[in-house]
Image (tube, rainbow, N blue to C red; front, top):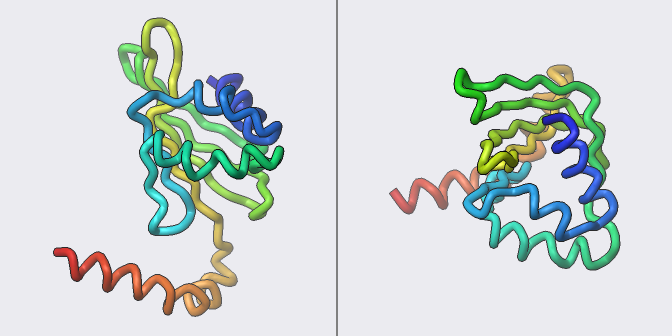
Length: 140
């Protein structure tokens, strides 16, 4: 499992589009750091393609990783602390064993916010995120 995740992150760092996306299930979802970023695999591929085409996507290196397997060994949940261009981030994933091969079903990326600066971060993001909140509430 760690080798798969390391390979996935390495493929992004090398801008290996095919290598990166072959490790994701066709029905996978990638949830990014922005509240508006919930992508199906096709939508995420469309978003990522121009980044990979430039020869540089993103570079995530796992500093810590925890993995839990289901009782039947066919599902895995993991969380990882990552060193990224955004500094520390957390990744969380659900993987599924399909025909002897592990695939990423869901990945959630979150930026870490130290408690000491959380008030300042909240102040900086409030106006932008209030618009997102209002937009979602309007749809209800």
